[in-house]
Image 1 (cartoon, rainbow, N blue to C red):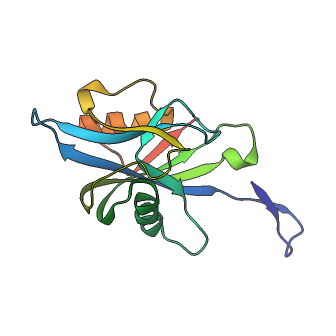
Image 2: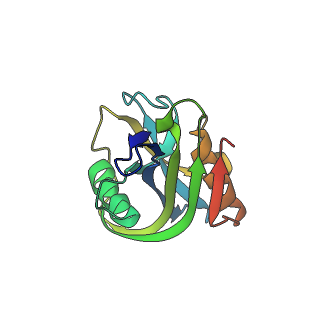
Image 3: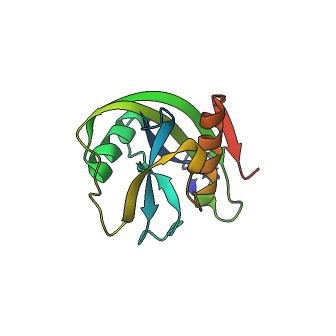
Length: 161
């Protein structure tokens, strides 16, 4: 997105920030499982599996606060203990609104049982083993999940460049 800079008269580039939470647990076979939602009715990547909680960082909000707010709003959990994974710069090269910075977190501890809170935006919510992720997963989220599974998540990642 671009905005007009009154000081210079120029158009300035604006990046859209978002936070993502991958809820993780040890599964019945002692492997790691991740909680994913099946998107629907959002207009973006509907029919794809995605982080159980994610959304835009609002004005005046930290990335961590946004992650905790989205966790409460989307899957009804609180007291989320976040572990920072990576910041991702991504682009789709089409519109200015496609310039993004995403903050990815893992959560292994929280209060409450995750559940679908917004059925108009979420068709399903399920735990999946790292070794048996569903298809399709939102591509830029899959990049982070694959790195998490490999045990090597770099602090800065890129997608679309």
